Length: 224
Image 1 (cartoon, rainbow, N blue to C red):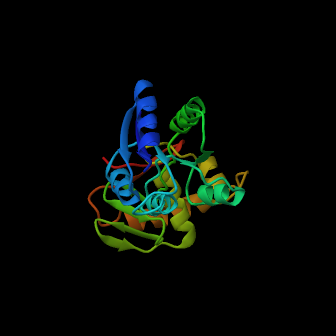
Image 2 (spheres, rainbow, N blue to C red; image 1 turned 180 degrees about the horizontal axis):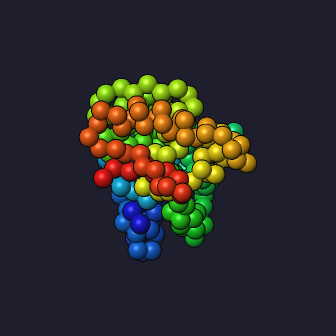
Image 3 (cartoon, rainbow, N blue to C red; image 1 turned 135 degrees about the vertical axis):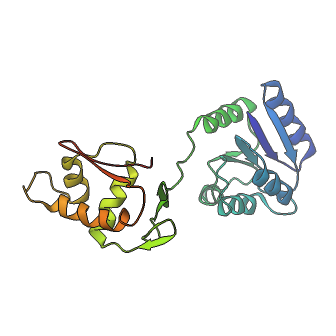
């Protein structure tokens, strides 16, 4: 794994470098918070080991700034600041673990390995696309080939469900349960009427139809 170490004490930095390297890892050392920020922002690290009391930009601010910039690399604070409030502050700033100096390297290594094993956070989806059809989940807008499509709230919800399952068969029961929160079939044409209106807005006047009816099975939205 590749580890970024922010530590301004030369002896401690050398010890960490030696320990991680002997364990088979690649280490990038720096003693300045701003330098660490730039390295973490531009590089691909698996774990960061951060001292809080460093020049340039302190470790707490470094981690806060990285989180604000969207860097999600796990960060372990390794510091002599020992108070309970300080540990809480470090974790709330975006740290994933907190180890107080003096420390046993075997424990540090175990904690770093544990952080590296964590699955990455899933990215939040804010836009759905099927061919030239786009849905902005934040702005609640839909467009196709750059042309704005106006949908009523329930139509938007139905199209969103279809687009989240693009390329897959979506049955009537799935739509009733997930779009209308109905766990029984009311035996009405509620789905058909909504689907008809959506198709008129999404597919009419376009060469390619995206929404398909799979007779006797359900619906599917897909780009050819």
